[in-house]
Length: 345
Ligand SMILES: [Zn+2]
Image 1 (cartoon, protein in one colour):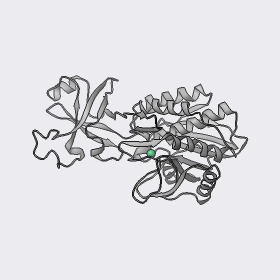
Image 2: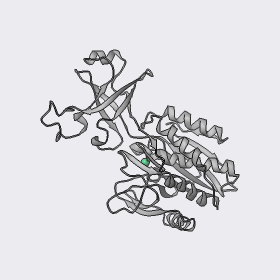
Image 3: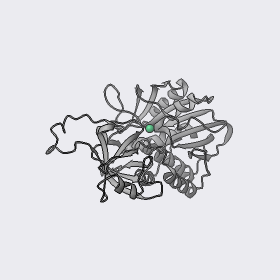
Image 4: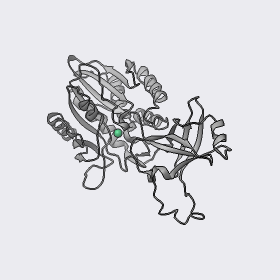
């Protein structure tokens, strides 16, 4: 079925999601936002024990159930320790290059609910002082957070209420350009969450019903590998909606919907993948079929979790993933269109 996604709605919700911190393990705030958005559309909202969300959209025929997943958790960090100089050592949440967060503004979220700002730097952050500043290896032990508070030592930091185990979120710096690019951290996978909301909104506004029952899984531990390891009973098929990788010998572009045939968890379901390719062709959606060697999705987690399902993986092409990412609105909107064609036919 051909739908008309609401571009303004999708981009607005995407910008709100990008502006809301949500490193894996610290997603309560963004989940209330997901709940509000779901309830505004009249979509039932439920959560599992670890805080992932399930939104349901009944179909015309309940003999099959299709899950569409996207993860709202992102890369981030945690305070590992406080140095005698009053800076914070970090431990990563999720996998990224230290170069990609160097000099980034961040927020430190204390357990008592206070939020402090800071900057992530190497421990040799100035060429005026450190001979090795340029070549010094950017690795976790050589990175720290400079807090924007009047602190000179560890005690001063402890007095702020900051301690090991506090979450650190990176500023997303989300910008939507007039040329339609969306540049921001964490488009992986908030661009896909926005695409799923675009599908729900279209179903409400355009008044269509999916063929089979749909359950939307908004997962919250994907970046650490177990987001959708557990899925609700009765799911037959699952489409993980997650970013398409770009570069090297991959053909995906930021304007494309990526259809992943195989990633590090192995090949995706042959028939589902074939059908998605065929639908993309029929709808004249710019798309790319690619293989991702260093990639696993929520569908991989669900399969490894022992669920009896078939699975596929699609999503908007994202450049410089897990770094300063960029995609184009065309890819996000076309992801919604392709999903609609799959579920509503
Ligand atoms: Zn992802």
